[in-house]
Image (cartoon, rainbow, N blue to C red; front, side, top):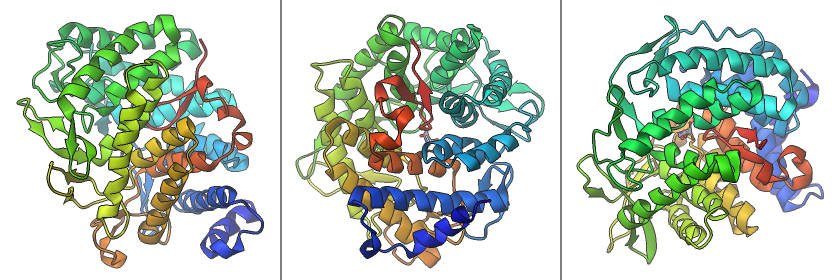
Length: 471
Ligand code: DMJ
């Protein structure tokens, strides 16, 4: 390992605002974020390489969280590439070349393995052209294909990677069955074999056919019948990335092949606007959800924070729908939420009402990316430096409270500044994959990002893995 990588965390920790050494504010912030990524990566590499996660407080490996193939390693690959850590990237690829995706350690989520492992391999291949990554992606995609063996053609929620067969439970969520389409479509483009595309996109055909009204995609389903089983309408857990993928498929597949998904997205936006968006205290726009009985609940999850980014992306394809304006208004509301907490970390859940300030309902922060994801899209769309400043504030909150001896820790109570009691010994892989990547990309000038400088040629999967658009 190069000395500069070992020194990077020390430099990062010593770096003071006054020591900017002639760097512009933007470069300084970008370098600082990169240095803390290096600090986290090097600890993962030296203490937990190949394990799913690194425990950030005691530096021990957590071997099997999502299948046991080193999800942090696979999820971080393209971050290494984009931050120009090419030697680290090559070392990581050498480890990945040894992974056997036909042997897993547990039964686990089809959704998570698809967005993190398959997505990570595809993006790293698209960026680097390393053939072994495509070979590994194909091995994994072929295993995941076995999960579609249901009466409706939906993938089952969990797959047993030891026995190489689905866990045949009837329940499916919209996000679980509706967030594999980008990765599987890209696999068909890269291999020339349409089977991945056909299996994944058939799911959208069934959803479109069985929906009870225009744009009504409820979040609970039955894998056996292919029918909706509730009236849950949500852009949070169990629904979120399905809607995101409708617009992203249009981006990826182009005007002809993507037309159907743009139509589905457009229809879903009508329900979104009329049922879930409401004015709330402080002259703000808020986003709630409908529960399984169709009753409106005035609650905002951290997971909802991706919505402004999705709307800003959608605006480019559906002019005249006011999507950017709604997105930026919602982002104002969401930007206010971390300010409710003394740490500046965004909580998992808040409630809202027309006549009182929002209230924190669930106090944890688990290093999620959705807020900085929307800042990234907002900055790219407007070039307003306020979104860089907010990204920097989010990063500083992580650094002040989540930074632990070997990485960044989840935080149990964002209202309590006494971090000794509030840090939890867990660091999900999406912190290195998404949170770090979006923060870095929000500061990186185009010249630093040759592959990504033209965002019209790339689309990010829901784990922030960039796939090349090749229509
Ligand atoms: C990530 O794995 C993905 O962004 C997913 O779409 C939602 N949840 C997590 C992070 O919060």
